[in-house]
Length: 285
Image (cartoon, rainbow, N blue to C red; front, top):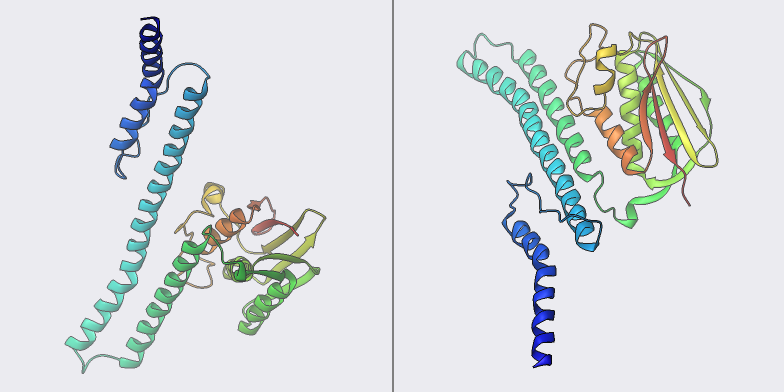
C-alpha cells in the first residue's frame, strides 16, 4: 500500500511539474510561419522551465524579426525590379507601334541603360543573399586590402570624373571572403565618386586588433535627416550633384551587411567637408 501511495504521489508531482512543458509544446506545435508573433507561456520563477520558456520566446522574437525583414526585402526588390522592366516594356512597345518614327539608336541606348541597371540590381541582390550564409572554406583566403583599394581606385581614375587621393593608404592583410571584401571597397569608392565634386580620399590603417578603411569625398555630404538611413536597403538620396542616375540603393547596405557579418562595424562619421565613411574590420589569425 505504501508503495502505491509513494508511486501515486510521485506521478502527480511529476505530472504537475511537467504541465508547463506540455503547455509550451502545444503552443510551439501551433505556431506557423505566418504566426511568429505568438509566444509560449512563461512560468513564474527563475528555474530551468522559466529559462527554457524565455529562451524559446527570444528565439521566436528573432525569427519574427528575420521574417519581417525578409518580407520587406522581397517587397522592395520586387518594386525595384518592376521599374526598369516597365521602362523597357514601354519604350519597346512605342518603338514597335511606330517603327518609322522611332530613333532606334536612341532606343537601343535607353534599353542598354535599363538592362545595365537590372544587371547591377540582380548582382547586388545575389551578393546580399550570400552575406551571412555558411561560407565555403575555399572562399576564405588571405586578402590584401590595400591591393583591393588600388584596383578600385584605378577604375575611378580611368573614368576620369574625379581624382583619387591615396596618400593615407598603407599595406593591410587579413583573412576573409575576398569577393565580399572587394564589394565593400568597390561600393564605398563608387558611392564617394558619385557624390564627389573633385576628389575622393582613401586611407587604410591597422592596429593589432583591426583594420580601418576611411573613404571620404568633397561633395555636399549627407543631410542630417538621412544620416541614420544611409545603410538601409534601397534607400537613395538622389541629389543634384549625383554624378550618375539609376543607382539601386544597395551599395552601402552591402557594405554594412558584409562588415557586420565579419564582426566589424561601418559608420558615417561627422565631417565638415563632404561625407566620410568608416569601416573597421577585425584582424584574425
